Picture 1 (cartoon, one colour):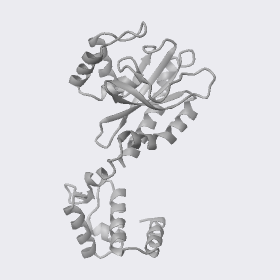
Picture 2 (cartoon, rainbow, N blue to C red; picture 1 turned 90 degrees about the horizontal axis):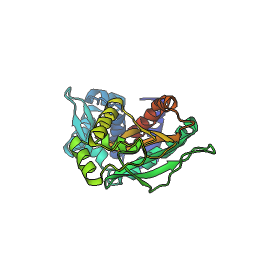
Picture 3 (cartoon, rainbow, N blue to C red; picture 1 turned 120 degrees about the horizontal axis):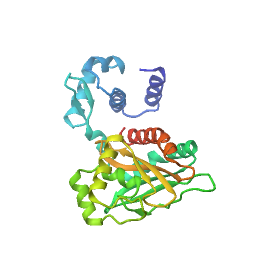
Picture 4 (cartoon, rainbow, N blue to C red; picture 1 turned 60 degrees about the vertical axis):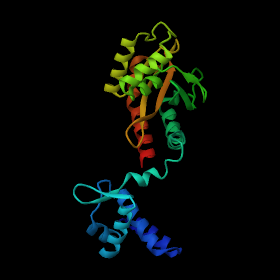
Length: 263
């Protein structure tokens, strides 16, 4: 336990409240910090409480489903604990976590960044921050795009089982939007497999002429794809080499958002 943590806990206790609840929260905060879990003896030492007291708290939390045991016997926070916050819609969780990180991403790449979700067989934009440059790609919150022709859409498709991808293709079709749009089931399925393997998607003027875009997935607590983030720019500035050079920073941003909504 760090001095800062001890001071924070001491201050909280000094402010009053129910002491056993303070102790319970101390244990939960410690377990949350210990990703692999912690044993009774270690917790007793770290939070400076007698073993019998810590054991009673742990047993109660385990019995109520808020803790479980690792194979080695260590206590760890259970999924029920995290599920308590899931009444909030996933899009609100993602937005709250993503907005400051998207600002940093736009400052780094100087291009437009969009975030989208899968909805009714389309990708819907739920957040956008435009490039500060005079010539830029633009979008609006609420805009809907085809799945097969956009980087955001391809990422969302890649997170689905093949049977669901095929169902959406049958339901929505594969309309041609530009000369490079993928319009056959075979080409789209091949593209989705590439996205899964490489961890990002490319829209190479498939949705709009003179526009190029890369996209990457945002993962929820169960590691499913819950949203996608993209960087888009005009082709005179976003050639293929530059698009690929931005993949790393895009994936890092997506990973940071994923961690934030899963913690």
